Each structure stands twice: as C-alpha cells, then as structure tokens.
Image (cartoon, rainbow, N blue to C red; front, side, top):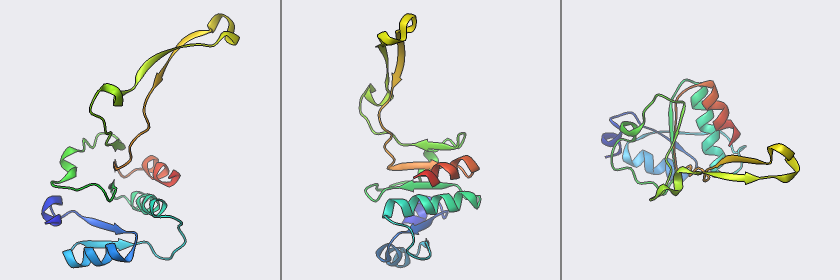
Length: 139
C-alpha cells in the first residue's frame, strides 16, 4: 500500500531495527545510517536527510505520528527549496504585525515587527540543494 501511495518512489530511512523490520515486511526499500555515532532519533533523521540532499535526492521528512493516505508529493509545489506543513485552524498560524515602542532608541522608538509561530516540523519537504542540506545539517 505504501508503494502505491508514493507511486513507487519511496525510500524509508530507518532510525531503529523495528522500522527496518517493518519496511522489510511491507516490501519498502529502506536505508539505515551506519554506526551509532549520531545521538538521538531526531538528529539521526536530519543527518540522514542532509546526506541524501547532498547526494542530489529530494527528501520529505515526516514524523511517526503522521499517517499518509495519499502521495505527499502531489501537495509539494517544488518551486522552493524548503516547504513545511504548518498546523493551525485559524489565522493564528500566519503570524501578525505588531507595533513596538522602545524609548531608548530616541527618535526611532516606534516601529513594527512581524511575529510568527514556531514552525511545526512534522512534515518538511526539502528540494535537493546545498542550502537545504545546510539547513538539515543545522538540526
């Protein structure tokens, strides 16, 4: 079923033996990072993403709580290097322009700034590029 969802373009990057066994049982191609030098599951995922991006492979990073019912690539515009799913049911996830007042700044004490919520990195699509690889390496 997973191969049908992805149209045959699926490589599971496994971070533990259970994921390898599940991929094997489902007939999905999988790859596991060699060695145990990377601390933490999240760090391993982003390290693997940076390696794949540097090799010219575009990557969709998805958390274990995300259930894919259709091909996620249909929802990726592919015209930018990084796309992130942002949760939110109202306009609050878009951010807001906020007025600021900082008296020590003298004549420029009044201004505006943009506030935005933290990005929810449960689903991130990264187009193969040096910049995307650098971003993945930062995680």
